[in-house]
Length: 136
Length: 327
Image (cartoon, chains in turn yellow, purple):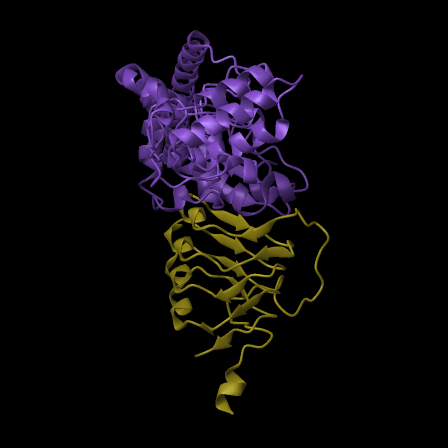
């Protein structure tokens, strides 16, 4: 029962969540760029990337590559309204520069690591409409 | 002589149905055949009988019979053995001469046998003394004979034919040799092609890891190998393979580490290319200017860079907004 209560079935809203982008959203905007396939691990070699926004691409599948944790100056990760699956890699929570994370409306699963609490600059976290569970 | 077994050719009208004959038999045959040959034409049954006898290896009755047959038919067939005129004739097998009984069979003459016979004739002239005898080989394969039954019996022509046969045989052997050499050459060529496909990767021009590269290409390849497993670069379906090939062979920007392109710059451009191919690229993207010119100067769609040419934004959903730093 307790586990069921911890299920992050729809929304994870922590006090760092800013007003916009939080909450449930089932509508997919129409600005689909046409991306398909998967996000390659080579994304982690763009070592000075600050903004990674890949949204509204229904054919974008696969998982978030762990190499995303190499992006030590990353501030925004907006990978929402896609069909990304798998878990949110723990490596992402090692990027202390992150201020914005939005992965809503995907097919993510697993648990949300407590390490997210170490992201002192994080202002927005949106994980709604996934299968992610909260363990803390 | 009285003890000799007598046969009556006239009774059977076939003087060749026995293995041995006496002189009297021969004389009787002479008179009989001479009498018959006085006619306009020699009895064709007798000729046929003589041929059957020769096929079966039995001797003719005597020389007179031969002459009678020859004169009657208008042909000069050396069918008889001299021994038949002196006494009993044992069935003998001589490898020297062969006789073609049926002219129709001569068309299928075995050249190998003709060659052998020609050699035998040159080595053993005595064999000509018994031209009528057939050996077992001839009986089994009468087409192998070298003397035709049309009665021409032209030795010089026969020799000429033999030489022609030798030439033909040589040509045939040469053809066989050439055929074998051709097959070997084809096999060798196929091996080379297969090896080339393995080494150079077939139609795509080969994997850069094994192909011959320029110094610039080799330098690019060396940098890329630091961030990707070499086995992935062999997978032609992998976006890394395609990006690698694009950067080394197709990128018109022509990054050259020797000309100042840094390791980070090469990796950045390679990584963007991998992203492009991994997410559908030209096949799926609705519009783009990727892989065309410098990613920062040309401002690839959704890409934002620092003043130093380092990518800081990748936004492929709302790249027209301010978030990509181009506003």
